[in-house]
Image (cartoon, rainbow, N blue to C red; front, side, top):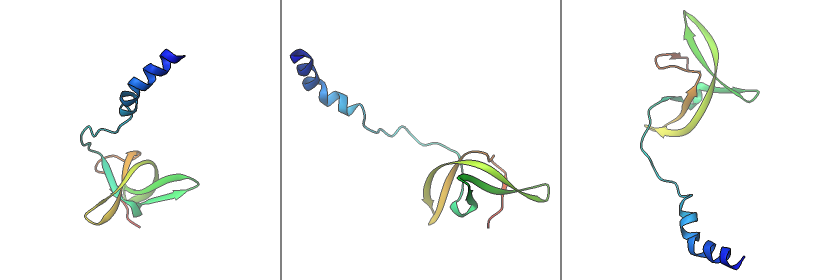
Length: 88
């Protein structure tokens, strides 16, 4: 046990540093104004216009951020580029 403790003490700095966050770059994705996302029964929905009708579509949201003073939310799944989002 004493040898193991010595190893932990000498390597502790390296073990802690491994958990640090390191930015790895930017990513592209779909984002909509946060007000376009409605939550019902714990599921997030966005209303889209298709073929002249409106339909609620379940989505999985990601990070929230501000762009040009507007609250935005990233959409991970459920929405494709070019889909027409109906604003409330």
